[in-house]
Length: 124
Length: 372
Image (tube, rainbow over all chains, first blue to last red; front, side, top):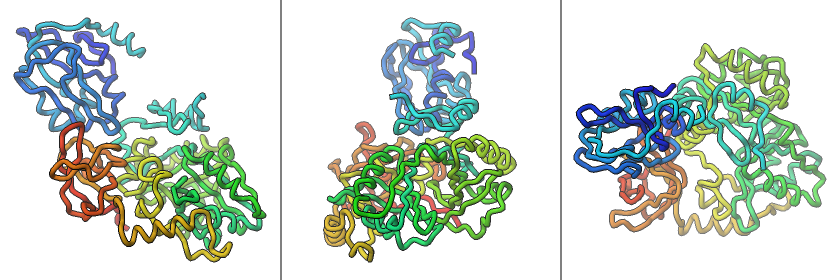
């Protein structure tokens, strides 16, 4: 699955949409979802929590492993995706769409990559 | 050391497999979704490359006596073309490995060890062979091993062989021709389903894999990696060396005392570990230490190997040896050693999942048993 050009990416394999009214949507990339395997449990920050760019804000469990979820941005969480909490496999099947994780009112971000930069980074 | 490659390595890569280092071998972990592969084996069929397993041939007039001395089972009592699950222990009763022994002829046996222990088993058998008229041969490079597992396995094999499949019982084997290649065809497996293991020449592995794939496509056969092999064996309550079994444990500790045959008549009943295992058997009867049990979680977080099992007060009462989401049950499951006082099925305990106590219920093993 190719990396959509309208998104920005981190080296921790999260993606971030351009902000709409200051709010961006966050998810993990297809590359990350493939590497993890079938995701069975997603723990997300709560609405109202403040997350910090580059720091852990949740957890993704797959059949074989537990991985930290890193926030690509600093700011207040405005919404979480209840659909992936109920059905974590959405992260595998639609990583860039229905498998989004949370929305954040972006105050700052770490250095982000564009789609080409991220594709080069993952060596795909 | 570079990873060892199986005869099917190029094929796995062409199928887009995610590979993993398993006991020094570069093995397919999964081809797509491990959950889908698991469910295919439960409902249809799966095809595995198990060429990492360690084959050792023991032959000679006293091959049976040697194995009765070296292993805990009564191997010489096995009929020709029959197989048995058994173990090899140290003098102190600690488990060196669990094995399947196939009797391939009157005076010849094929011992199949775990990849991680193949050298240890080979060394122990070679050492224990002293004084017996028998030869221990490292046959790891002589065989590739494919497995076809699942309810459709019989029908798929039937398309490729004239062998008497209805006559081939569970834990039996036959010299057979499959897809025009000579193989040992065994009705064994590690998934809890009906199925076959095919021991073939490495040069024939690709031909057989392709033939089995073509014969199985209509039945929904898919290639399966080691990830689903692990969840399949876990649901079936089968132990995995390094998890449920170790040199620190005897077969009695693992609830598998039945494999120890004190009733052997060969070698005057003597075998390596007998004295220690008699003590372990007595202790397991009178005052069992921790017991091996199943745990089922109501939540979604997965209890994993090495996590602690705790009681209502948070005191540690056990340790998880294997844990995974169960595709069949739809909830997380685990195998754990817990104190005998908490080992009764139905007991409510908890697992410390990274600092949070997740409630689990003790259940009898296995989690899954196929309908026969």
